[in-house]
Length: 381
Image (cartoon, rainbow, N blue to C red; front, side):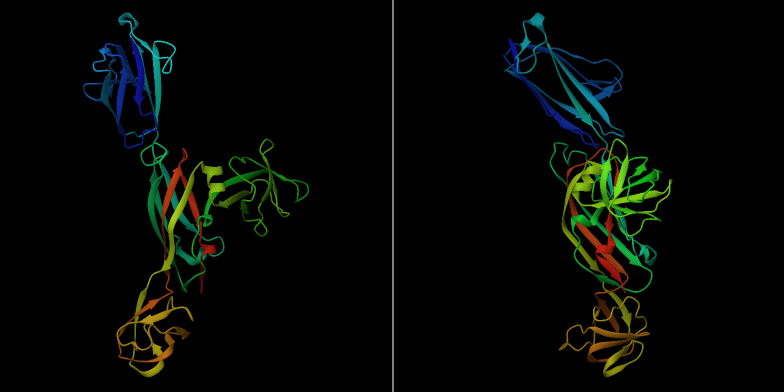
């Protein structure tokens, strides 16, 4: 008699745990035994559906009606784990495996369970970091092999707010995947005699040609021109004068560099950037005049911000601010407004929101941070 099939989903078990159906099929009367163990030596108890130190073996199970099935319950994990399913064909009951399963009396399946990968998204400004009160940050927990552990894509929505201290935001363009930058820092070990020669670093693992180099003594925005992984050397696209011990930060936007550094592949949809409307109030009445005094003009941008609210002339929808002097706005159309009227300002302000949905088709084994390059997306006026 032969056991002809062992059906057991062996894809990665998510951190939260899972329930898997085990089906063993073959000729009626075939007899098998099985154990399920985890890396620490615990055995699965098929009656309590729990792992424990006591040795447990499901022995001499006879196939009735050509198959046997049971549900295996895998617990949640605080650390990565490995499970081993061993199935024995009991030869003393004249049972063997079909050769498509095993050439011996033992068939083994190994399953891995990983804790989720945490991806932190944070804004970064290489040019104007001192202007930001907050560049925003959010963290997403992603199963390493997808939402159900079987390689299917996992989607996760995100949103982060950026806030500046003074002035107002101007949106330069819509965000794209290449604005998300992978990052690695590495220290210079040996300085070359000539600035165009390679520098020796403590690590070049994961770095790739084309990544941008940044640091206190970096001149301009050179990129990696060449890498020697054995010698741990990097040649920059332009000559540099750097010192041993300098920490150089390498950034690369898009999947080429994200996969190189983090073994992760992703896409982003519904990727949006917008400034949030905000309010100010008139401080005196205005009669058929383009000059409107307000309590605060902070965040209002000339030729960009528009003004709405009760009393704004409905024939001129949301006039544009054409000038700002102190706390007096000049509008593109004359208005008649009362004192203390609340005005809504659109396009401008000191808060901007980035939002979108990540689709992760492959998640690596380590937590990491993706930096969203705000200099590509926003200017501060």
